[in-house]
Length: 233
Ligand SMILES: Nc1ncnc2c1ncn2[C@@H]1O[C@H](COP(=O)(O)OP(=O)(O)OP(=O)(O)O)[C@@H](O)[C@H]1O
Image (cartoon, helix red, strand yellow):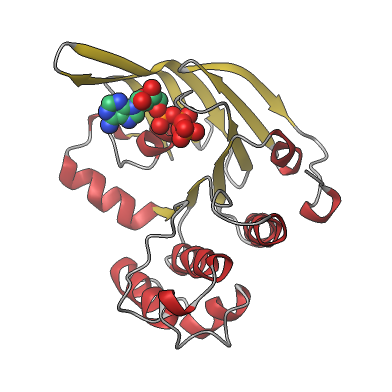
């Protein structure tokens, strides 16, 4: 059995009379330890899929199996526990706690997840050892995103989910962030799923899941994924 299995996942959002089918029968698998990319145009249903995968949103129907457990019928309380024990999130807009320093943001994550990670080790790994005592507002976008990745890594998640992690960053900074994510996937056994609309980024992935109109359009397995340094876009 694969680490992740989505089977015929449907997600409908209702507002008044209007129903939007954001996912219209999404089916794919991801193996443990893979670096996977979900690719597709704006509005295709990528964030919806990632949120369902991370237990942040519930599917209307279908199976969402992670580590042999079907989380699609979990209660809200069970989903909270599931997220805390398994998932690290990286958002496009960082979502750091503004009145905590970089170090404190990462420490908070360590405490909540009961992780045995060493905060300074993690900050160093993310190139932030000189920035430990800075507040988010004192950091560049790339540095804030690195804090957000440090925070996710520090909880030692089995699954790390990133929604357009380079969306708000310039080219070089975006590359550094992708390298950090790719290195994390190579050096730990964390499974990583990244959303992007940048087709070039998919060259660095083990698996590319293409989504269009709420459906899986294509799945490509890359036997020789490129290193970030080898990619230009
Ligand atoms: N909470 C919501 N309520 C109503 N409609 C929603 C909600 N969230 C998403 N949608 C709709 O579902 C569809 C898919 O949205 P989703 O955010 O998953 O796409 P996406 O591929 O991630 O797009 P983008 O790249 O622009 O972020 C869109 O038509 C969107 O308007």
